[in-house]
Amino acid sequence: MATKLSDNHIKLAIQKDGRLTEDTHNLLRTVGLHFESYKQRLFSICRNFPMDILYVRDDDIAEYVAEGVVDLGIVGRNLVVESEKPVEEIMPLNYGHCSLKVAVPADSGIERIEQLSGCKVATSYPVTTTRFFAERNVDVNVITISGSVEITPALGVASGIVDLVSTGSSLRLNDLVAIDDVLDSQSIVIGNRDSLANSHKSAIIERLLTRFRGVITASEYKYVMMNVPTSALEYISTIMPGLKSPTVLPTADVEWMAVHTAIHEDMFWDVIEELKTLGAQGILVSSIEKMFV
Ligand code: PRT
Ligand code: ZN
Image (tube, rainbow, N blue to C red; front, side, top):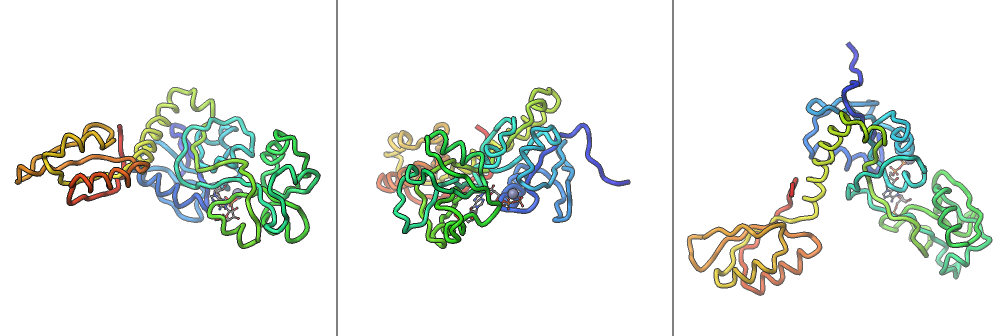
């Protein structure tokens, strides 16, 4: 009998083959979902969770979610904004980071977007670009290009571009410099509004989101174990901005205590340096796969 999608399952659309695919698969596997995935597949059925996964072009995900073809999608925020589809932005996933930027030839002398007034600007994001310039009262002629936008200034097609940038090497390679930010983006979960209002579906969606939150929160923390001089313990406890009080355990030597805690990445190095000066020794750091707080 042919495998088919189940009516009792929620449906999630993800990018079939592109920049977000590997990280999305990793996330789904890290939250414990078991499913087969082969390049030629159109969909997979999770063996241990009531969800089916559809593999599609990223450009179609917002539309499929808005139309209720699927209940959830994982896609770059840039495409959700550009599509203007009525979907719920549910959760950022902390990968696929990039920004949509205005860039111009490095030797153009253009430093501000106002200097592009009356000029052609090439982009694959015409809706977002048009809105960006209109909101700033800069009158440009937006030219829609489906790919290789960064070569259009050299071809004489446009004076500037609006394109996605992550490392910036593509801009440098084409002698372009960014002069303004249009939009920050990362991979996000989007949801169909009717599905979110449906009690059966929303319960399954919430179970999945709880798992995602556990992985995303964990990615922001490091687990730290160390020995600290007993005399310094009280002060050390106050500088460790863990989630709760650190776990303190006695060691074979009464002069030393073992301390375990989770430290947020934003303050990680500052705290480690201060701990060293306060006499902490044998500091072991490990990443955390999942964390529920
Ligand atoms: O086939 P399908 O339609 O599904 O995929 P696609 O080819 O349209 O999209 P894909 O896989 O290239 O990108 C998917 C999503 O990844 C985008 O919608 C963004 O949300 C996100 N993303 C993150 C990026 C980048 N980083 C990125 N750097 N998308 C594109 N780029 C481009 C950039 O424009 C430049 O041309 O990659 C090139 C290299 O960038 P630099 O700055 O690192 O040099
Ligand atoms: Zn695409």
